[in-house]
Length: 270
Ligand code: ZN
Image (cartoon, rainbow, N blue to C red; front, side, top):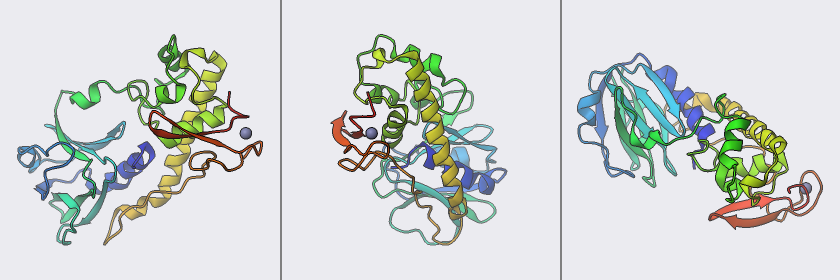
């Protein structure tokens, strides 16, 4: 599933190819995505200039002077640039065709992605309740401590709640909790200030490192069949249940928490 680092990498990959470009037309071959693509979207976008590409959580906003086309990649979506005359494959559901002959193509085999519209001056209802960006100064120990105060919910579930902070997906929650030495099931309200500070540091470090690694794939966003692949990351716990802890050699424990695979070291994480 595309996580925040992949979405940010996509933003950086497509940005130089679409900012300043004028939209020729929007071709919607399959409107039945997670939500239907609005029928008026083609009219809204026709002739508009893409002024900027912004990321909010896992949404990508292509801003025009009238509003923004709002993409989400869902479980299996990807966006990349093709020549507009390149024939679409079966799962190529939407092309944003530019006047310069290129197109931004949305491919999404499982169709859990979406393409919606946010009018200028308004905030789409899907964005209203989002917490701060994890790499922004607004996400700090004060913010996380306030979110944790008095809460019995497991800390892993709390940091994966997008109303608390956006973009901490399952892999990153597992890795950050290991790095901070915090047991994923620990009640959020029972973690010391010092350990909350450490967790904030680790979430930022791990996400920033993943985005950094994604930078090596930027060239894949343009050309023939150059669909961007998701980058490999060095993982300490995620996907390593039963294997030895990288710090202490204890076998890692794997459990389900909120239906998500959760791996931790029973010795290093308290
Ligand atoms: Zn360990």
